[in-house]
Image (cartoon, rainbow, N blue to C red; front, side, top):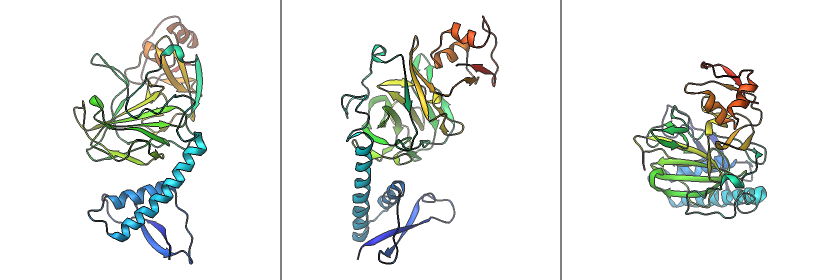
Length: 313
């Protein structure tokens, strides 16, 4: 008799498993149920966290895993063949952290879709306070966003994709790098534990590791990067770290005098934040200072106030 899972939300006071689902089993002749990919992942993960797994649970894990692998392989093949973003990359290197494509090989401007029915939706990898932004920091370029967390906190995949790297890598410490179907790659560094392996298909919101402070790190945090063809782009240019969502469902990736930059395709105004300057705003949108002045009807710099809006398109 085949056992098919049904699901109910876990109840009770706050504890480790309050966000997971509990399963019950019914005869498939009486009831048929559907299950999402994320539910399957959560069930498997919760079983694997048990101190002891008996023979029956092993059979259940095997059953779930066979369904999950079938579904995920079909997703990968439907989206872009057996490997993601083959139109942007020549190979799927599981050892080299990044192969940087020179600026000269980029088109002047291109549009990349980041959320759609086929690509899936965005999931914030870890909700928390941003402790360090993208940009120069203590004489070194900080190529991502640092988000505060506690050791052992769950870190999840931002988008659907395939794990390219999942191991300890120098200053990154334990790091997971995921290649997505639109050509973007996301980086999750300083993890205490990695929960995925290279070549594994993951979905948005799936657990990929636990927060930590491995590598060059002064304390527990998630170092999160977004890259395109090896080039780092400012995550805050495409993701709101206050609202925990993407700013738009597509972005412009542009070659400028400052290098490669990215911003939402619908960007017309930029709201000044602490630390912004005319130069930083121009750089963020790939504009010259003269172009930024012209867009805002001025021929000189003036003091920028937090909350003020500048036209950028």
